Amino acid sequence: MARIVALSGGVASGKSAVTDRLLALGVEVVDADEVSRDVVAPGTSGFAEVIAHFGAAVVKTDGALDRRALRERIFSDAGERHALEKIVHPRVRDTLRERALGTTADLIVLAIPLLVESGQYNWADWTAMVDVRTDIQRQRLMRRDQVDLKLATRMISAQAPRSARLAIADEVLVNDGTLAELSVKVDAAQIRWLAMSRTRIRKAADETAG
Image (cartoon, rainbow, N blue to C red; front, side, top):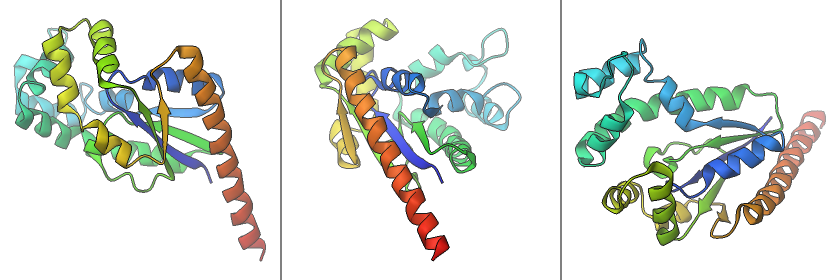
């Protein structure tokens, strides 16, 4: 019976750094971003729905989705963003739930960038939020994605507000400092999550024995 931790945070908050550290510690991690690419890969029903709605303008010459064109379109039109979310989010949720319930590990971490927006993850046991000040977030995003200030600001504004993310968090990992400082926090969190998992497993065993 794995402890299911939903890990989230705003764009460029440091979620990838957290998951990289967790993987190095041997934790099973499922990345919703990777799953979201899989569910709209060419040949899938998700891909067909995306093309039916957005048209050939978001398809590259090799037949794959032109993610840059799609991103620019959804971040300039909230209606288009919601249309894409309706296609992608249910498929991602179903895949993550299947992976979480099927694991044999004591602990599984689901990295879900749009946890607030996609909703319906109340079956997770614990929610951990990676948090960073908005000014740092904006700078990191511009550097990481090579986008200008205007697009970076739109990308941040398109997500749920920071206050909404913090409101659903059982635990917050503040990432305003260095990578080394973040790693120390992740190491401590992993120990706590494993301890909670093993406590629950012992309790379930006791109840079964009783």
